[in-house]
Amino acid sequence: MSKTGRRAFLRTLGTGAALAAFPAVLRGKAGAKRLPIAFSTLGCPAWSWKKILSEADRLGYGGIELRGIEGEMDLTKRPELQGERLRETREDLAALGIVITDLGASSRMHEKDPAERAKQLDEGRRFIDLAARLGTPYVRMFGDRVPPGESREDAMKRVVDGFREMAEHARGRGVAVIVESHGDFTRSADLEEILTRVDSPAFALLWDAHHTFVSGGEAPAETWGRLGKWVRHTHLKDSKAAGEERRYVLTGTGEVPVKEQVRVLAAGGYTGFYSFEWEKAWHPEIEEPEVALPHFAKTIREYLAGAGAA
Image (cartoon, rainbow, N blue to C red; front, side, top):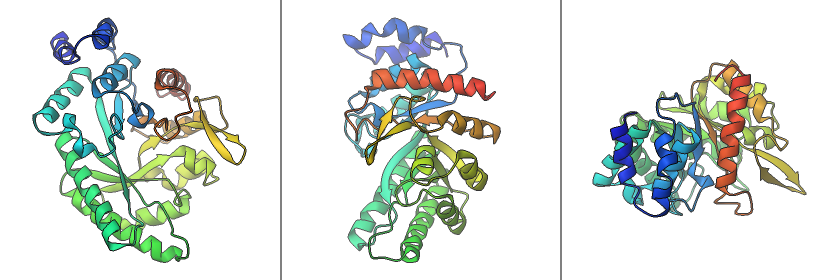
């Protein structure tokens, strides 16, 4: 990355606290190869876009997963991602050598009510169109639920039909839709069925390895063995049991085998990002991003080195 590119980015940071970060950002990772590690903006819900960029650079992250900015979850409404500002955003990212790994839509394919279903599909299309303008390869969506009182097959058919429609829209724009292992769809058998029935080159899997282990009850190697050929992105996080619930904890301090998940991914030839989904927006009681993001970056580097992937 050239000094000119960094200076152009730094000029957009403004004054005050942002300028105080100037030396750290300038030193950053200039000339250094970035590891394929990313973090979701779900973990820093109060950060401005410029702070997200500068912290990603300072901590050595190669990617940012967009899941809301400053509390606005509909990314198509953010000024940084519209019109001339979108071009500037792309230039800032290129200057830093950081990519947007994917856009996190909230679209749920299980919805049955016609008006609600139309709303979900509309959001999916808008996020796909935004990803195309950003040059971002993936848009995350959910299968989500099997509604109470409904048969699994009826819900599954609706989920598959929705993803087929989204994948077709994405395919024509050079984007792919990725279904997250989430909600009622955390077992490999269910995800394999969805992926097989949709059967589109513009449809793949975001492996939330926490959910397949905790909710799906599967060992990492079991999940990868069945679904590895579809995995294009990951969510990694750690947790501990807290009564009947679970509490998210710093990576490597809980009960989720994150180190083994990384080893399985690396051994399987995974070439995507190892992305930290710290759910601070939903769980304000967990550690601040100023603590969790540096900790993940340090820990995941150690895991990648141990797996021969760094």
